[in-house]
Length: 78
Image 1 (tube, rainbow, N blue to C red):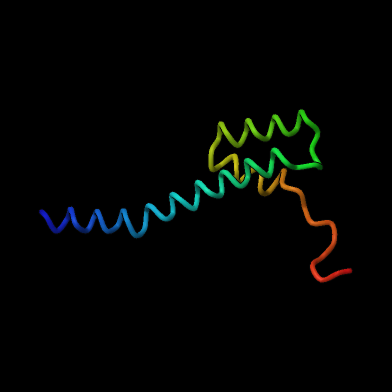
Image 2 (cartoon, rainbow, N blue to C red; image 1 turned 90 degrees about the vertical axis):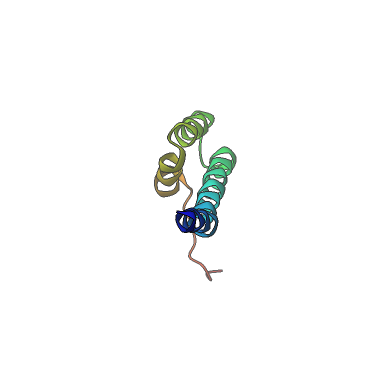
């Protein structure tokens, strides 16, 4: 029984916790990006912030693939 508790604790510390922290950092990054996105109108910014806040990780993913600004020039092009 004690071994199960130790295994659960190790799983939590070394696997679940780092993933949760990375997902939280990604969520904050997308939230800041939506707020600072110069390619969006004020209404669009408010809408995206609401989507990200209310849908959490799913909202951040939606913003990444739909609302996040795309690079206009390819890397390495001058």
